[in-house]
Length: 187
Image (cartoon, rainbow, N blue to C red; front, side, top):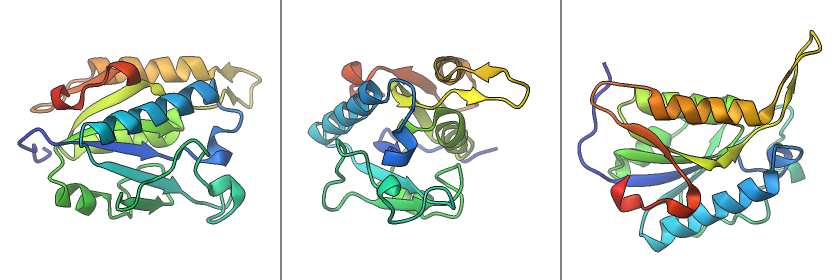
């Protein structure tokens, strides 16, 4: 069983909202705007923001595609985590950075819903954090399967929103909230 974290210190985790990740993603302009709104609201409410940036052979560190979406600019002093796996926790300093901030509750936004957002959400819950998924601030691309079928991006997003509303972990709470309605003190 995970160690349950006492207290109510929220942290906003912005994952992989990078040029090459959002290009061609479902309603990317609206979603990136909602991520930017969530960052603005977190900063205004004194909530720490942690930025997670992915790199791999298709998303090369330092390339134009690897850069943050232009609407998003990490502020001086906000932690930046570099990762190479779907979960923001795997082989990164994220756990240590969260501990330094006294984090007990992760508010999650970013890309891609069915890969890095899903893996990070489950990773947070498995490590004993409470979790709020910003349900209108994550996106992905439609998946074309080998058999000719498609998994529509909107369906993948809806699936994770439903899961994060109804999952149950002992001693932890998880939910979803819209970017414009998010009040960090009550998450």
